[in-house]
Image 1: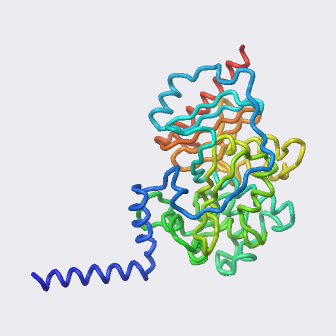
Image 2: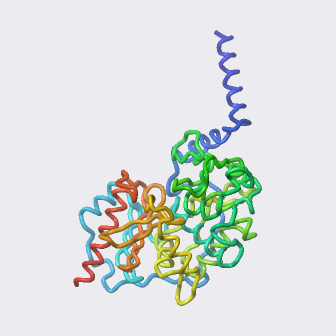
Image 3: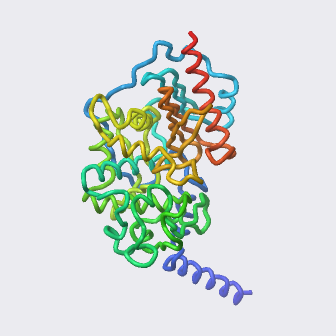
Length: 384
């Protein structure tokens, strides 16, 4: 019996050492993080358990004006059920740049921070557009290998920054959101994102078609950091967050204090009203209070599909339609949405704990229900 116990103990020690020093050491980090948070997946408030870099609020905030019919149009029973069932924490409808409706749930208020998850991909795409505009990156066709030596050979040598932004890299990446052995989990936990991504491989020809992979945006964030000579957070603060009059200081998760690389594919902690600002900027073709913050041609390209067979995605933005009208959206894990319909001058924001089942290639049923509610509310304004 003692021999058996010693043998099992020895096996456990060897297993621990293999995990600690081997290629799957992130599983130990993930297990520790799960124990610390009491969760087995990412969640809205998890920024408190990671290192972050501040994106400071504007010196002079620009609050959203309230619509003349602010919060006078009742929500439908259908959307109230959605908010309750899927645990929304914030819901905004902005019409003609004025707050038509705002609600908060589950202890959240207008200043409460929550994790953007993949909505941050649209932020990084905007940073790419600004870097091109300022000549720090030549164009969407510039090679990733110009900035990252690990991507100079083989199929990787053909990879462009535009391929990364449009999700067409051919990257070997497992896009799962659980505690299994996959790229997403390792990227979320690792204290060294540069090392992880420089060891990733391009296994199929870039630029051939759309496959949504968070690793693409992480690579793009690394390219931008090299091209800009500064952090994503500081550049975003300077070029967008301050000029757009963000009211609250935000937090962008980084891999570790030592390495300081933003999780470019996710994890920008802010609030519903400040998230909505990027939707307004793109709705207004890059203008903000008369100042051109981002090239309108880049925005126009971003909100059109790159690939005809994948009409749901452009460059860093998800695309959609409602009754023949084109829209675009920032989308994040668990149902974080900023949805924009420029022709109707409509922005819909929802943050929450659950996203519900997928309906079609354009989004979940919750996503479609939110759009329907926003348009119905707008129609009630029009008819009154």
